[in-house]
Image (cartoon, rainbow, N blue to C red; front, side, top):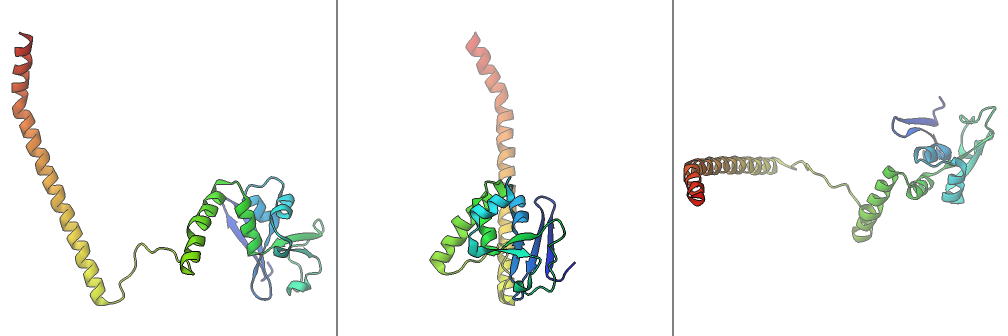
Length: 184
């Protein structure tokens, strides 16, 4: 396989061929992306949803992208439409596939608003590591206090249940007596 050609294989979505240009920018085979996103008419989807400036047509002469040979062209295929990252996002945003909808929702409801408000986006970290020994000890102490509080709450709940079960047991004969007294 040519050094410029990468193949990304995904059992859920299929294979995507990617060419890296001389600046290491990825160019995706448009039909591969369209197929992964569930489009029925692959070529039409790329034409319809990807802007011209986000795509190129790769022919057997691929020197414009800095390739020595064209690793994608064979006898049956004379040209292939490649799309850049922006073109790939255009296809994703236009897809009706459930996973594409989730991606679109994440980008439009979290990423873009965060960039607009703060100028950047970073994934929230659930388990940030302490920066020094004191912070690590404080985190450990907090964790131990939480564990102890949970254990005490569990013990108190078990005791309350035991007491209420005993009260119910003691009251069963009185309830039975009251039921028989009502009938008589």
